[in-house]
Length: 277
Image 1 (cartoon, rainbow, N blue to C red):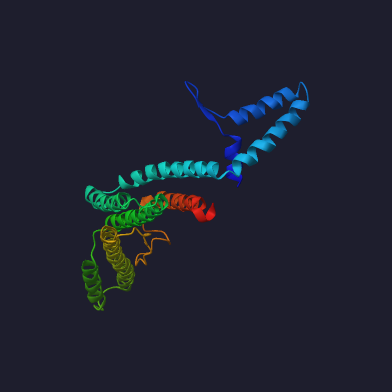
Image 2 (cartoon, rainbow, N blue to C red):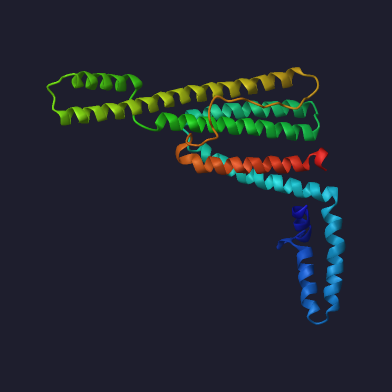
């Protein structure tokens, strides 16, 4: 309710050549200044605000306008951040994402052509936006996993370990040399474990990318076949760990920031739904 009261206080009107003027805030300021000449203006200003603010803040149409403006603000900001992340990806990754975006656009087009309720379309658009965001995070994670670290493979490391262990069996080596080679074997084994985990993560990410693509294909098929538009379900149990961090490299903070934006956008959308009106 506080944001509705705040919006009501700063409600304004567009004036040619001046832009949007906060009429109510200026009127309150005027009453405040006049009050120094005659205290009665302060009482008059308080009475006016006591009547205007609640009448606007509790008005459903005004609340809908505020909610729409908040959604647009979050949407514009989030889209700019999303585009910045997309530009970090190679062309083939961007092409893959564009393909998913087009399919999501076709789903919404089907619902609009079926003259579905605007709230249903808006709800489904938020669901598809969430799927596209998950897909983008998976692409970023895949790119980071492939480009991070060295070019060593599990096979090359296993060969190095085997060669060193063979040399360690030679009792003619000095104790210092054997100690050095033992430490190197330990390091290589830890590197091997890291690379094996990375490869497992890559397999999981690729599996999840395919799953999201299949989910969108299913949503498009259902939208085209069903006579009555329905709410889209996008609940997915992913194999990849996109929550604990460390999957996005240099983009880690940008991804976390956009995650918060998407959470705020969903909260605003929920507050504007009919059941919360």
